[in-house]
Length: 171
Image (cartoon, rainbow, N blue to C red):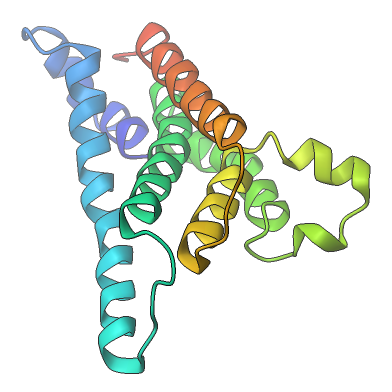
């Protein structure tokens, strides 16, 4: 939405005549959202201090899964913001993409209660892979082969980033 909002306010039109590239514009917006996401880690640290929440697994593995999850979901937002005409359209597209992921990724509805076919479909959501990885690394559960979750999230990140830059619109 941030990119679409800047386009709506004609800020991107002004940037177009400067040496600023779409990669730079998207990178700056992404950096802002990464800072926002770090608040979730601060919240987790506060929970650890205040209520004794303990990470049972590897801190490095948890932070890696957190970073991959964050980048893959934010890259979808970059793509939406890069191609949407305005912030209203960006909101609608983002809602259509994100709400099914939130509901079916295991954050609100346990994956285990879904029919097997549905479980296979939602396994390709980057958020499903990310939530599963973060949960398992937090609890110290051996994930076995992490190639699928890493490939899904890295693939979504790469694809959405490439498409966001390719179809970026200044106006």
